Length: 475
Image (cartoon, rainbow, N blue to C red; front, side, top):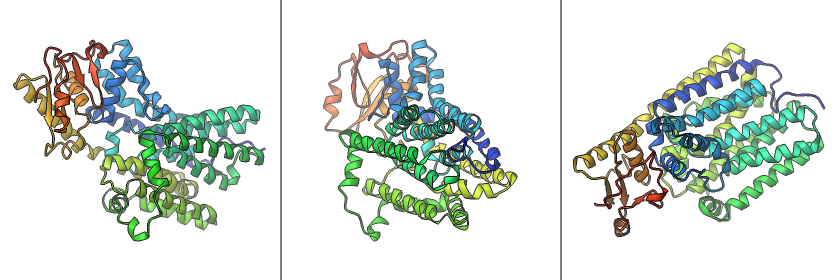
């Protein structure tokens, strides 16, 4: 078999200079993660995970999304070392892009998989603005693991290693990626098929292709069955498996679909020239099957989102994370067919321009999240003025789900911010439905109410958190 250094290695090294822009891009995003650490670490899931990892002293893996361990290792190990809490919080915010930067460096300089590297950069930017401030959606870590799986297995196949060893590596790496988030199986199948269609760069023999294709589909099927059993993923899978195919007029009434097309005018307009330009060059090079496959696959993915979120007027931070895999599907023709036809300078300039424009959108989106921090800070200041340390705020509160976007993270957001402010003891507050208010009020003075559970005093690590154990919650 002909040796190749990458699953989708271009025929020329024109993409090398472009790919080297990706680690630089991620370093810029890393700087943003540090600069806006409060905006990211005081928003629902991140403080919830941080609070649990620090106090329980173990990883907090939800929905079997095992690949998320990589970023949770930062607060876990750092808290065991007893480093200052502010530094721990900053490093947890940074940990996501530290991981992504390591992945990008491996893709570019170890595996020389320039196309995957560029796709990774486009994934992290093209549909990203608000979702930059919600780092804990495991799909992003899953995509990083997936790109490593493709690059590593391609590299291994090029070395003509024993098939048995190749199978073990393939199963381990692709299972890790797909088990990190269900959406990864959709991207994995697309990239596998898209790369197989570009047979000049395909590193596998016919027998290997059959074996690994069956293994990939088996892993995806097993993840589907596991996700279908219970929990958050099961509710989404039920919507897909139990919904009849909607009519065309109904599809365009789905909030997610409407928002997607409306976003072209204000936020995601770069998607249009990138997608159309890539398809044009793919068709021009007579890659008709690949072009039709990509269009149908992207349409199917968007339809899938519409069905899953058909009754949800969801927030932009959330739905952007669901759009992001679409960037990989729709940018593959751009990376495979358009960029290799450009000169090195032109290709580098074009991709750098895309990254720069999207960085502006990402950093401009901080305002609503900075406003959240200001509101939380103001509420803590009022509690200090009134000498309150634990309060329950009855719902509905007019600003709770508008200015705060979501308020279920308030118990841990407030105590973490109070800790960062240097309060001793720390103050905490939560919002409660009137029907649940009596239950919240019954919490004893030695109990702290978290997002979804009650925390007894013995479970709190007092070297980091010192709530007021002498008083009960009040309204």
